[in-house]
Image (cartoon, rainbow, N blue to C red; front, side):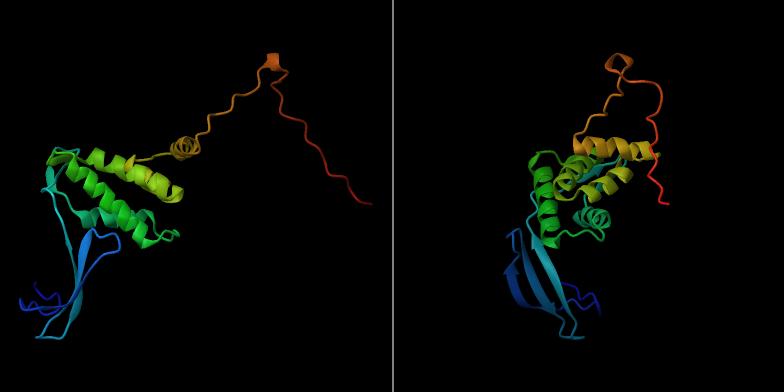
Length: 176
């Protein structure tokens, strides 16, 4: 493993242990040339995944890019990093187990939306605003209504005793 500090190819593993969810091996390494210490993670990769972009371009799937986008959506939110890591592991596992080596970027986005919806509603709205390319405030309102499961309340009709006039304003009593 190349040292990220000096570029030396000779590094030594000082400690190895599984991560909390046992999806990877965490290795602490030290470089004998510069003394630099760093951590690496070893993960099982079932297949090479390629992302098919909306433009038709193909790019290799990058787990780190997925993690960064979630970190942006979750910035300053009270969500433990372990929960985010489990979510990313779950998304990657789903993508790898689909049997396809090419994954549409839309599919990845939908999996992220599902995960964020269960994880944190504010992060869900943040991510959705970029992913779905919101242009107006009503786009946010529609998503929040969808999130709440709230249907738009219907205005009372004249048959129900409703009127076209706004409700009368009441004044607070004044003190003398």
